[in-house]
Amino acid sequence: MTETDVTILAIESSCDETSAAVVKNGDTVLSNVVASQIKSHMRFGGVVPEVASRHHVEQITQIVETALDEAQLTFEAIDAVAVTDGPGLVGSLLIGVSAAKALAFAHQKPLIPVNHMAGHIYANQLVTPMRYPLLSLVVSGGHTELVYMEKDGSFDIIGETRDDAAGEAYDKIGRILGLPYPGGKKMDEMAHEGKETMHFPRAMIKEDNYDFSFSGLKSAVINTVHNARQKGDDINPCDLAASFQASVVEVLVHKTIRAAKEKNIKQLLLAGGVAANRGLRETLSEKMAQELPEVEFVIPPLSLCGDNAAMIGAAAFTEYQQKHFAGYDLNAHPGLVLGE
Image (cartoon, rainbow, N blue to C red):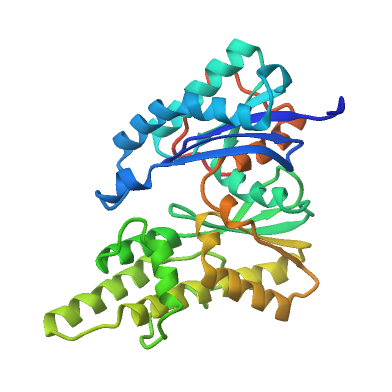
């Protein structure tokens, strides 16, 4: 390593993945270890905060040690410790924040708090350099946002969901269909096996803003299923999934393309857990090629779409350069807003 290299140990524990990573200069992953809790939460049909917190307590130390081992580094080679301080589940966040504070104090390293949503955006920096101004469509279980970035570290939320996030709607519809948690991935697979035989609402698609709403769509799908069951009618679940996904994707793509045109950007980034959705990736890629071929469209690999610490390390590099360090009084901020 050269004298200018910055190597960051990053920790992510905002929900149901315990993760630690070592990232160099914000764009090179030396290790990225993720321990998933899906099997523990599957029987409950969703994440149970207390269960998630207990898993983080059990796994965090071992995950950090494994990340350092895989990077073949000791703490002497680490320049800073970064951690997600929000948004997320407060108990889960506290485990990561407490571990990061202890490590930073013990080894006398700067402590860097990172917004979880900024991490999702900066996951793209692990694919290719980010070029400004850019627009990022952030789609996850808890968030659906259009974020405009004029420069590195600057976040302007120009559109967001007013109720359910897209990923949240996927999981709720999956539950109605009896799919195991998380239902979003299976819904995407089913959508590609079915056809759009039902027309569901495209909420707010014609409104002169960049906001989203998926609660009405969720209710329309649930009512369709309930009405069919009461009448004894059969509904093809793959067709239902295809019809639901067509509505979600059309609204997301339409508003994203319109914002991209109006903002005169150099890059469009897709970010968040739902960035793994094949229907969204393919449709947005096709529309960008047709309507904005001069704008670079970047999608992170599937391994970087879900929650992971490498993305936190990527975002932390910008914070390190700007010397945005925290004291040992750092706390969890479950309702943290991007840009605060």
